[in-house]
Amino acid sequence: MAEEKSKGKKQVPLRLSASLYDELAQWAEDDFRSINGQIEFLLTECVKKRKKSAPKPKKQTYYPPGEAPELNEPFVFTFPDGQTREFENVKVFLNYVTYGDEEPPEPLPVNGGED
Image (cartoon, rainbow, N blue to C red; front, side, top):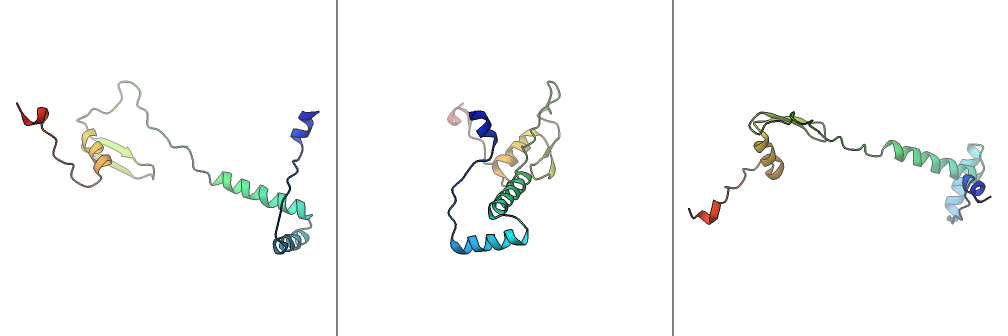
C-alpha cells in the first residue's frame, strides 16, 4: 500500500503572495489549465531546461600502456574549452599549466648548493 502512494503525486503545501497567485491564475486561465496544473507545468519545464543545461562530465585523457607521450617528444593537449595547443615536450606543458605564460622560477640547487 505504501508503494502505491510513493508512485503517485506528492502533495506540497505552497505559500504564494496574492499578486503572484493572481498572475498564475490568469496565466493558467489563458492556457486552459488549473492553477495547480499550471504550477506543475512550469516546474516540469524548469527541471527539463536545467537538465539540458547541466554541465557534461569532463572527458579524461587516458593513454593505454606504452602509448603515453615520451617526456622529450612534442606534446599536444586539448583544454576543456576545446582549444588545442602543441608543446615542445611534457616538461614545457607542465610548466605552462603550473605557471601560465610566465617564466618558471630557477630550480633550487640540489643539497642547498653544496657539492
